[in-house]
Image 1 (cartoon, one colour):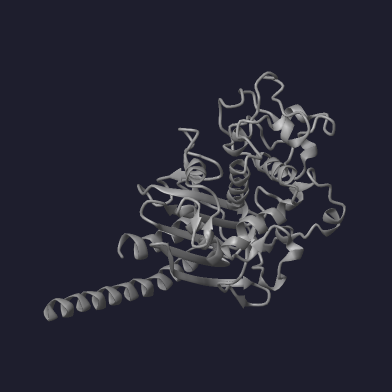
Image 2 (image 1 turned 45 degrees about the horizontal axis):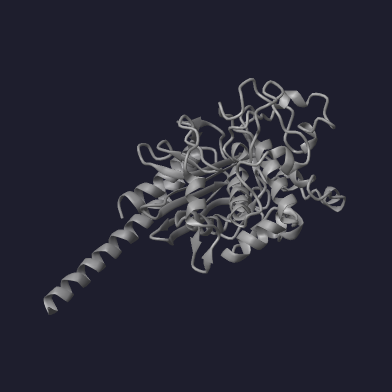
Length: 380
């Protein structure tokens, strides 16, 4: 028995030494990415067995001041924000306040119909899955673009195919989703997400710039390929204070950008990811039911492998099936991907890097995800 205990203890020591060695491999590998690519900063977090086992930040939070990027810096995470909106919808569905098959026209308060298919109802389910036949050609920062009473060119917001018969990624879909959350719950969109998702999970973040500590913001830079320079993107954190002061509940919602406006740190995003990894469950209870969470993660389009603000892919880490989402806006690039069965996940956020895409994803983000996967997941 004594020999067995000594043997097991020795194994634990060897595993610990191996893990430390692998962690030590990460910083040089990421520094190599900085040498070979154009990158301002990277903030990362890795989850394994429902725990954050690694979190670190590299590079700069602000080029002009020389401030380093640190783990509690927050970023506008772009389209990963959509999953916060979809999670909110699932809560309202569970509460009996919404039905995924409801006519969006009734939910937003004006007619939403593809003029080429006026009899085909566009449902909430179609918005969440980008199967609505709606596009962003007229813009998406206001509902006026698709409102027939506001825009004489509203017809251009629709594609030629019938709703439900084709996929096109569309930001306007989720700005309408945010509006529906507001009209249904009676809470301003940003406050709903704070009260029903962020606060229960103990996360710092939000959609309203003026409600957050601006000293925590990582400055976002857009890389200009022609000049080979990084340029500050002030619109990434535009507070839109005047518009909020004149806010119309149930219509002005796109001001907060439900489609891309969440600001949060990589570490807190990883904690949020753990909830999705566990199908809606967290230590304090549930954000949503297992059924709702699985529905979000189940593809409705075989071709695109997209559910409700969550996609499935084997291309972020080649040949490995992962679930999650990416984001890109104003020069920022982000990724949140996980395996709900094996209970691991990776978050990577860059506040500025070369915009080149390879294999369907930003090359810097994909390369960083693979460094973390190879060292902490594939070879534990």
